[in-house]
Image (cartoon, rainbow, N blue to C red; front, side):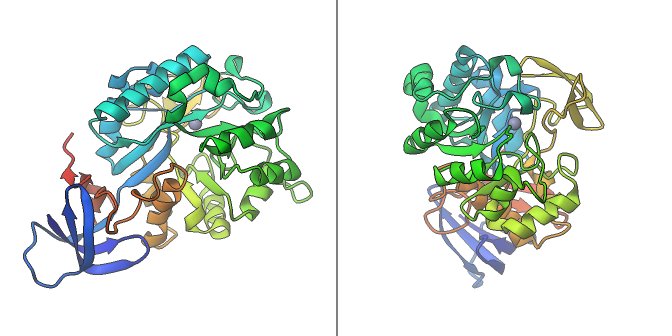
Amino acid sequence: MRILCGQVITPDEVIDRAVITIDDGKVIGVGPADGSPVDIDAPDKTAAPGFIDIHIHGAAGHEVTDGTVEAIRGMSAHIAANGVTSWLPTVLTNPWPTVRTAVSSIAQAMQEGSGGAEVLGAHLEGPYLNPSKTGAQPPDSLRPPLCGELARELGDLTSIVKYIAVACELPGAMDLIRELVSMGINVSIAHTEASYEEAQLAFDAGATSLTHIFNAMRPLHHREPGVLGAALHDDRVITELIWDNFHVHEAVARLVVKVKGPDRVALISDSVSACGLSDGNYFLGGQQIRVEGGLARLMNGTIAGSTITLDQAVRNAAKYFPIQDVIKMATIAPARSTGAADRKGRIAPSFDADIVLLNPGLSVDTVFLKGKIFKK
Ligand SMILES: [Zn+2]
């Protein structure tokens, strides 16, 4: 199949009037149109790699902690319609049996098909988080860091886990980080009171991400820069950013991108089950939440995830940065945290033909999953 678009963002470069050639689910070529016939002629569309959302708890009335493959498939279909072509279902802190059931449903969707955006693995947000920075994580199920526990609790399902959030200042956390990194799991510092020095040690131990920057962590102080100062400085670190103009003020979001560069900022939704639905009362990992004006909070007022899909974050960021940079934040930066950067996040030969065609206002027009047009 050959698709002609007005602009193709690879995202290493932007090619005007370019043709993407796809065969057997893979991109086999991309370059300027040469007048040869095409199957899809979309001169007013911009083609970008499909978006990759590495932090999602729920959407379209489903939650990852529902623990069913139907929930994972319902979410996969909803986010695919909004330009997300692969994702990491994200498990809230919960008792181990609940986590195990959720990871099992994720594994089933990976093996048998998700019916939408490809599931790349599981993201566990906890349970090794600081009790003083729980945010919307259920506090009763937090655990002190303990080497060996993950493999003991999940058994064969351990290999499904690609990403885990850890508060690095907790006793035993540095050994745990080293163990998780040796297992090939991406470690993200999260829900944390870590000092600058503690965060530096965690990054030296192999942690490579910071979960939803500025949220659920010690603030930046000019005499104690804390985990934020360490993560903003360190080129080894990718920072997750919820760009919904609520979790982080847009002025601060712009600062993050200026300091880190678009290669090291991963836009995330952190969405909950109310994503795609109207205001009202919902649940988040067993806790009741209220959504008003699209903003989700626990009943005590604590912010409880977002209701956006990643295309909205892309549009918010595109008000301030060139589209090529914004696409990096939704594609190659998150791909690096999933273990799939060699086949996802770029429109390039040998990469999966996961492609989104965008209208001039950056709304999503058409989504291709491994070369096939996605229809909900
Ligand atoms: Zn989260």
